[in-house]
Image (spheres, rainbow, N blue to C red):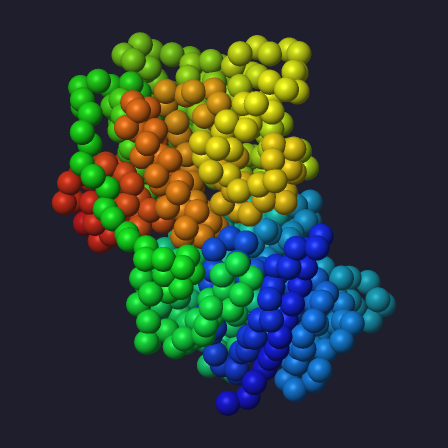
Length: 494
């Protein structure tokens, strides 16, 4: 079997801290190799070194037998290695076709960009992915899942030998994930090697032939996927046994209703009604476009309530904006922590204190008080950092998500909406966030979880509300909470 990529003894340090220690990694033609590890384990650093985004401090890299030295990302791409980043790398003001062919647009004989041809080629690529994105659509108008599929189309538009996929299904629905997996199988049959980074162990078992695990920058080992269980992979990642447990039954008072939604209707939602009790963890599941996030935005005042009503503690309320929602003791951690959850170039203390200042009408910032509050949250949420002054952009994904939680918990919301609480987060940090959510519920807080991860929904949510095309198609409790039932209701095929 032809070896497409071979990395030997790779080392890398940032600011004097070694983040990769003598790591070996390889990919063969037609092979899918999963790269696993907790956030901060060195996965992204390793593949960014391969893609020439970072330079290595030591070690060797060979691509199809050619030794690689002092290359640029452009050079590596033209040697057949293409990377789909976890953080989307698209230009919102350009069209889908323009993004796919950026800097290599097809031209006519006069050297002028041939837009009709470019749009046709983009349309073919997108159709091969099962996507109906218009090639002339502005990227800024697309949903996150559509942007992810566009990144994949961009990657395969090159004459690739190796594709690096960093958490490619994090924002994809079940149908879109299935399309992606079929595409990966087709590409591997053509001899293309796939490096697949994911925290979703079930995906790794389904799609990969081998799995390489890193922990704290060290190579733990490489195993054939057929020879290891999900639990064994998880244990290799975190260095200890990891248990997956189902959510407990709700032990609070179901008659103590804190939030009630009655007959909400809009261009997306269709006569949506539900209620949530104090101390409950309720989950909202469904395919992309089902209307879950839009409904939460409406409750929180980020979207106009066109018809229907929202009641808090039995009384109708009108929440026109986020500030009013915060004052009404609501919190909302949105699905995209980097775009709408955090200010990456600001410190932990500045991010964590923002909602507190809004709720308490703090007009004068007292640095000592801000840092004291931040230190308390760092300790409570076990945020791994250098201190309150550390910039959020330098934290791992799991610790960034904890800062999002810190920001909202500082205002002590009674009802806390968390959209995609662990997207792109490793299994160890994920379990810590689950524990935080459960502790909040046990203290009497009401938690609403929106998630595309059914394992997550079943692990922490005591009731599951399933949506399909703007409607609630099922509310599952007890033994009804199964993946099959959720999928049937999400697809509306019962």
